[in-house]
Image 1 (tube, rainbow, N blue to C red):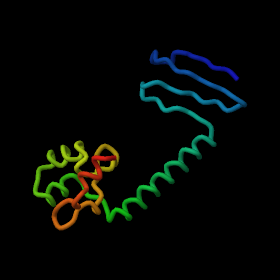
Image 2: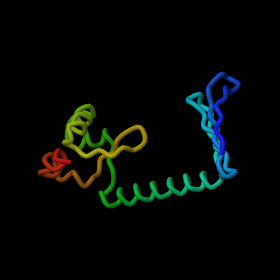
Image 3: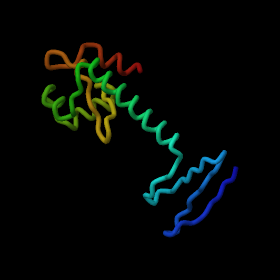
Length: 123
């Protein structure tokens, strides 16, 4: 078992770690990808599949997901106000990539389910 710190060809520090014949190299923020064992890659792929399956299941259970623009249209407010309400926990928003999606189950009759603000604020 050993650990090494070296400087790569563009002058960025990189560390390398080896244990029981499995070598992993971790690169810094220079944008280079890290190499790892096949078992690590399989574990990561499996975790991503489980996460995708979980999100899909939750989306179905929530009645679908709306984007910010559609929620703004539905409630008759601006997309900026939707964002403000999410930050104040007056709307439930689920991170999805670089944006948020809003579970459809929280909207009823062109508005928000009564009591949602109190329930979301207590979480």
